[in-house]
Image 1 (tube, rainbow, N blue to C red):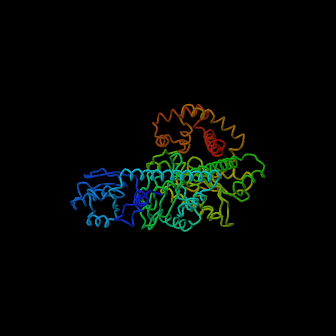
Image 2: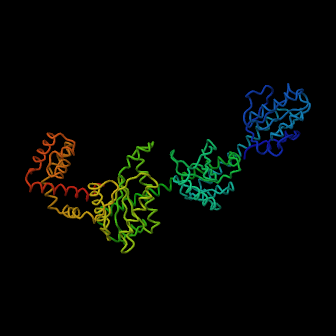
Length: 566
């Protein structure tokens, strides 16, 4: 609803005036100010200004007159009104033709019409239009606020925009997932899906130009299509975008005049409130899921009926056999440093693991598997329903391949190690499955290269240690043998346990142990004597060596089964 040259010509004070040129374009020239200018023009003309002039000094010279008009046009004036009757008897045909060729409006004003009256009435009309725009803006704000307060979704905001502009609108989140659309936006939604999917694999979207400094919408070209993306922000973070299809032949300024820009500004603010509400709900659900899953992992004692009821509320089916798989991202910090991201490593890793977790869930749904997932440190824990009958092992392996591929697509170069449990069912199955997967992962990390897949069925010796680690008498024995050594490590930071582990691995060979630990021989001998003193065991006695090896391995298993510290 901009004030244009056509609106100026409708004023009563302008009725005696005559439009000489630009008849078909007066509605395209906005008027933002008015001034009286005579020669020389220099840089006194403001863009979109209605320029009034008496033409003094150029009425007798057509070339001077044409140069004068040309300079006003170069200043991006909206129009020029020339007073005729005194300094200019008639506007030369060459000047009229020059302006007509460039679709620039020239208005002939009788000398008797005073410029002061034109300026007064024009400013009054512009102010009236501005007040009307403010009233309409207030109405729009109230209607959008009412939608938000009545818990309207993002599609309702898109519908409101379409009703106001007759333009289909879709809403996407920060990951370009469609989260809302107006009633007539199905074709736009389909086009957006096709082009965004293609852009993610073949070519990135290119930013053509910003549109408005107020709301910073950007025009994106993806393939043969152009889209207007209006950012939805809250607390300086992008929550999503309002998307409009921009016809290739339509200039951006014509497609998004100022009143539409204000409308989308208010709509973006309303959408931000919707996103905040959605995020709050999702965060609450996420906390409930997190607490529920970790209660299962810890084996918290609850009536089975209560657990099943909670699982149904969260969309899980605990009646199925589940296998626990732990995906450990071994080189996440290295990938962070290679990417030179602006956020901290903790913030980046939390964000990327959350996105990969969502991809895992989506991948599971495509394979008719409703995953139960949790993120811990640099690991994603997945409880996967077992399907496939006799082909379960092969089916699970193929499914893990799919999970790895989805992670690779988002985070190229990721190295993922897997710990995989047996299949279990029942109230305690999640606690047991997690311990098994964690044990398999720890053994794989200890004995294999990064990127391994280790099944609990492949670590038979460690399974026996797990059973022993749960025995109270064995736990007492570990404390008696290694208790003082472990306490010394915590107090002094010596890591004598690692020294003992390497010494036992190399069967008491001092030279190999010192090379592996990068220690001087005398330093290693000092540590070995300290180990004998703290444990009360001799490193030359076979029975003592066996006992030290056994208790050391049991401490590894005890750490594997400890989920209370998570």
